Length: 314
Image 1 (cartoon, rainbow, N blue to C red):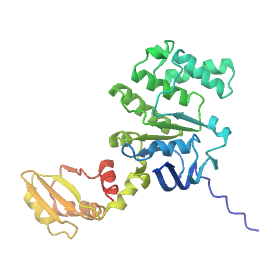
Image 2 (cartoon, rainbow, N blue to C red):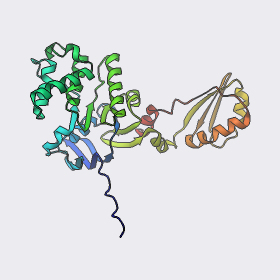
Image 3 (cartoon, rainbow, N blue to C red):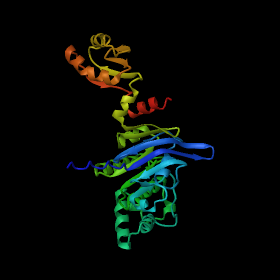
Image 4 (cartoon, rainbow, N blue to C red):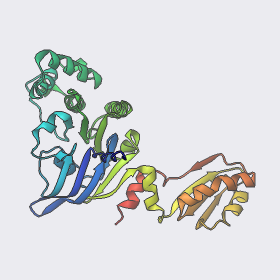
């Protein structure tokens, strides 16, 4: 007898035709997407629908249409899910008269932890986000950066299966930005699942190559940024090659069918190609056969900024 086929894995997050509107304003439009886990960047400009996406995901509001599932369960109306997620919202909502430590311990109590566990878990979370030095001050004395560290601490204190961070880098100074980026990367290395939203492209790129690109309430693309590259082959792509023999290299590249434009400088050749993947595949052999030294290859279009720009043109 043949063994039964294994059951298909349930995505961590599954949106099925999710639409959410506020009166006449549609914030999400027919969003269908699975998210398997790991660190995922939710990328889009301000007003793209990122916060609404996360509010539907965390069960703080229902979809107007469609289904939003988390761990295979309805995100809205399933209170048992709250302990499995940690949510750092984009806005502040503190008990200002409390100290930071008291605030984190109080929320751990809401999750059902006893007094000793609350103290230990709060101390660990505050230390991890580098908030221990000011944790015993009252929250109303906190700076913007302190408040942001505290929000992240309360979100991860109960060791959730999924950590959700809504614009955690918005308005903070470079030091805090660096620390939060490194924290997200550490969590990824530990095998944790994190969804982090941002409107700043290089910040997402610093945390993860896995993105969900959202624009005007629609998911324009999702997956690894290098896989998404395949979606934009139709767009011209600039590549600059630095070489001491620019004219010789230009002569070779000018004969290639995937080169549509070419500019020669004293120490470099810049080409435009409508088929970057195919051109990149052929380039090493061309350089080796020519015997021409190429010291550096750079493309301003081979980054998340270009992916975002190309895929949101429509």
